[in-house]
Length: 564
Image 1 (cartoon, helix red, strand yellow):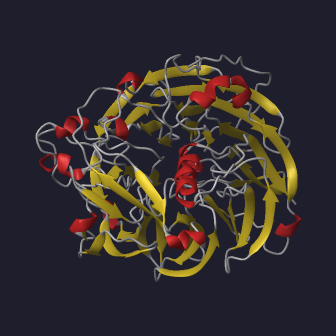
Image 2 (image 1 turned 45 degrees about the vertical axis):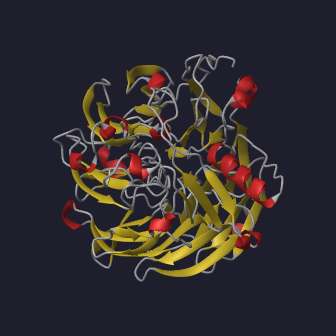
Image 3 (image 1 turned 60 degrees about the horizontal axis):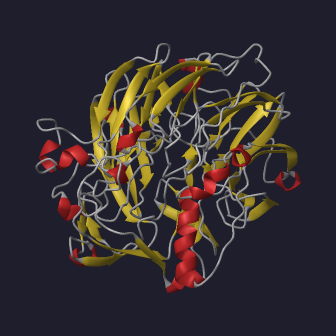
């Protein structure tokens, strides 16, 4: 394969009068800015702006667009295991937009005009072949930006110029470690985690000093012997137990805890590592100052379905109660109390069809139908498939109504059978193949957008799509829900109260990046980047194989900004 070490020099344009990012601004961002991946530490993905509303969204037009440009530069991307995907939200700080791309660029743009300020590109090693060629965005702090990379680096650059300030190595990429998430910054501590559960890594979250890049702590998601939870790992299985951190955590300001979702255990089949296998398929609450795990909740134990629970819970205070709510990949909703910094189960229910769990006990621990649990030499069928009821795309929550909106996929099931596997650093460590097939009901729909009342855990409406839905969700105070995610490459605005489609726009490619909304000089904008690939492509391939269809989804690769 050709080298992926394409150098891109900085382009013109130091940003004058860049507004520094403070702890106060991150905890209470201005209405017109989008400073974190989900705008606020609690993960709401909700804009308080109201200029664009249900009354006038039909008049939304393109304000500007900008091709991100990686595909012409990386001619050998066709040799990768999947097409690269744009999964970065557009962050906006006082009129300056930052977007990352699959080939590890950071692009700084005038948010109102689309005029570029500068570009930075991190050069990858010439012999790396990324399994998930993507990047999910930057973190902002003071006058710096931070990006995690596919070769497991954490990089700081100047927000004003794009000049690299420091670089830290989290782990050796040759051993299967890489990073796709946007870092999370709390009080000058930059946190990032690593992917690579399919390679038998030992996952971790690591904290760095924002100014120097010095490592402050490193917290493993798989405990070593003698550490809390180590009794859930027999023998030496902890050394290669997986537990990746795929997605940016949310931060519980009241309790001082960063909530991180932890992915699958390795190998995939549970009888190869008997036990609950903490802290895989869990949420962990980490103290940003020390890295100590203060609380955790495991959604299912001894995972054998590759239901990696990497999305952090959405944090909220509703009717005076501090909650953490999570729509798990395993197909169940979990409503938890987070008062005092401890995650305690309140209630749960399925939001898509799932046939593995026979129920949850009073602590939220599931019991299983043994016929749905694959083993070594034992085949099992289960629903949903490994892609789950939802994958990594973020939900959105309106704190003023108590409504949560989420993209889901249903009517697909999987199968697995374990086979012995030996660990080798940097080589897939699965213990099973991956099978998925659509059900008969998939002829009606696979993807959907759901709206849930969190007070009652009642589903208020659902809009179905024949195609899968891989769209992160944006909610706005104008009564709207924006989402892409379908293979027809449409970007849509829905009425948040009813689910009615109020506006749609044909894009140049599918959307798997989170939409955001911001304001410049009193004018509201909505931004999203096209760039279909990675899991959306893989999932569609299984659907086509099962249904005898051939779906061609345009890739795109453009930042789009809309306004009235």
